Length: 314
Image (cartoon, rainbow, N blue to C red):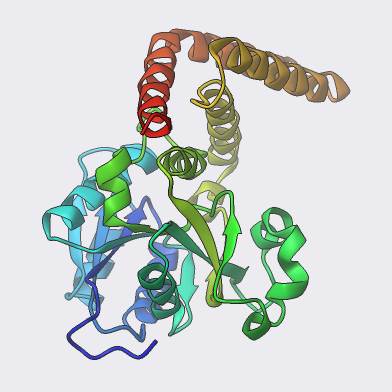
């Protein structure tokens, strides 16, 4: 699709950063070389202490910076940038991890698909390794059925319907946020984008992978800084999996509770195969944690199920 300079929808690219100084310069340099006529970049910093903000101020004065007083996590940290973008009348929001760099036409390909497909509300690119052009681990696992097509993007079609795309590069039409709300802060990190895609499907929106759009993603970023953060990452991911599996608005309350028990059984089986006191305590702590927010989980399920029923009933 050929565009004149006057018909590029405004795109806000939100980069949520937490001690990601190592990645920011290559990420932002690639972003500012994006072949698209109307975009802004905002860095939302979750109280980094590694000099990230100073680096961006010195090297990229065109990038707007929002500094949070503490680490709000992925969902609420990004929501701050999303609110800013919506207030500025952005047509599209992009959530982009700092441990990425993008190819020049990455954004134009996704906006072209979104503009031509009214039901497509969420889009994502094909992810490649950070240092080369092979598929990264997310692409090889989440997109396994599509790998043969994706190797020759020109033959893969303009877009492929998928259940979800990873939040490391998450493109959303403003209409979707207006219809279903922002990322759910009940997820501190992980599964928030899968939850968002599920909520969007319940409102009639499609999620699309765009084969011609390509980014390079390291995966893990600041979570790999030390062993403590790596353990925290594993805990946050497992906790979010329980939340996601207990709050599907398309299922009954009993069916969601069954999913909880099934998830617990799988975690317990893994623990028994390689038992440790630390692992056992982590699983127990997680159940205490989930029990402590059971009221919020019930409210979330009821709220989203009520919205789903309204859509189904017309």
